[in-house]
Image (cartoon, rainbow, N blue to C red; front, side, top):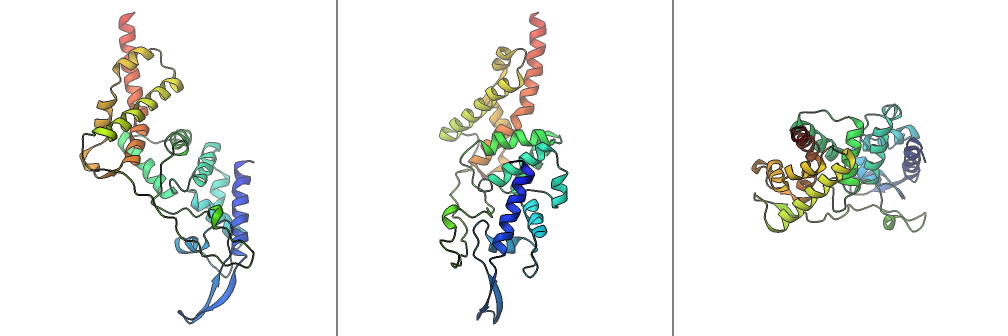
Length: 262
């Protein structure tokens, strides 16, 4: 299924959920309110987070909400987006349990500020794949608007008010330099990403590059005292994401050494 068609389907599902709308009298507020029997989305959460007119919710409104959830200002902006941006948006939607769009934007801003660069769509896509989509253990501190399968109503007449998922307790790093298990995990992540970059970028002098590589030194450069306390998973993701430009610096030095050897 093409990416735009995928998001059209999500918008249709959201519209279907809104069409389950029923009016009831709430004695607490002494007025009529709406209740829903959603199958796909947490309507209550969407109503809390977006400016939604419950009295006139159209398919176009549903498309707008879906676009907002994955980082576009409006649906027409999504239609004009690059293939990489659309693929990233789909991955973001499919991984809302790991990271929300707001958290992702903050993450990208940190990467750009720390490295004094502007990431293009292709680079953002590769970072998201490497750090989030292909890595288990991330847990958003935001909200996943999708309903889990076991939250679906068992029959059409059942009214379900979805509850927010319980958040896992994140492991915190509160002191530097890293030691013990935290250091071991950080080195494993750094070495894995380093070798992955060697495979991706095919440097001229990989053995010289490996001799220049010092994962412990790199970890100490990335993680600073002013970041503390920091969640371990987030710290590991920073170690991965920032490594790209450090790798390029090491590769440049390896090429210089290679010329001297010749």
